[in-house]
Length: 311
Image 1 (cartoon, one colour):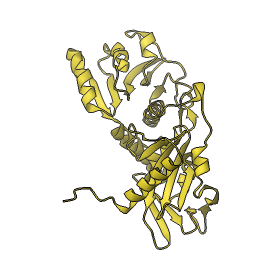
Image 2: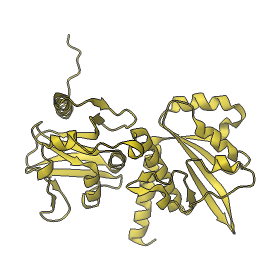
Image 3: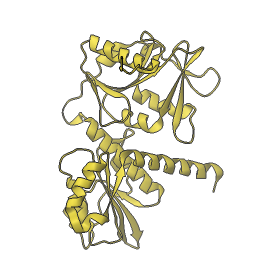
Image 4: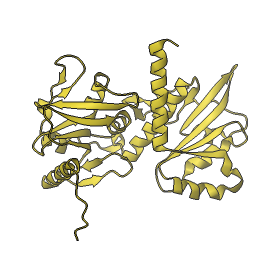
């Protein structure tokens, strides 16, 4: 009895795409830290989407959070496989990201990507399209992107770390807090983190080690007169090594009102680390990467809805 799982048409197309990439002598590796079907292919990072043959158009569901994460890494692309391995739109993710406001989506941030028979991406408005002629089957664009070296090179972990920080800062801003982040030159949606925080320097606190405080990934403060009261502290922990951020947040232990949050994708690792803290275990809270993404999307949607209805 053959127990081999039969691939769906879209999975089969995605598999053929990766085989084609290997045929061009590109190193292909799944990026495990991202939950989407994203691969490192040579110097590029590629989100792979596939749609079986349609009547007039090809349909792809694509979540805003996924595109945001992909667009933040080095040399990002989205490969839309349109019914056949010979019909692929290989578009830079940053280009697609800029057009998202013109693409239909629901309240959950799920974008409905429609690609017509000429392999152009359909936008809102009559006969409005992204001209994708230069992206069709353009393996050269994918396999020979700019090689980024030195300080400008961005690992996927560092990129995702800055995305999590950016989302935390935006949530804090929406809620009316004063926000601070130490990684000023890191970027989120092509904007430096220092340009979206409200505080350029970290406030000093009486009962906290300033050298530790100012290195915490994200801080929310509540203004009170000429002072700032710490409200929440966040550390993003994506590696499986030592979680130094937990120790940094311990400098706020004397502030009983402050919420201490660990943003991570490994609940098991979190429990292993935190149970060693004994008496301080209950001060910390675990938030999964996906849960933070859901909260961020909900906060943005609520802000937009309030603006729309004027309430």
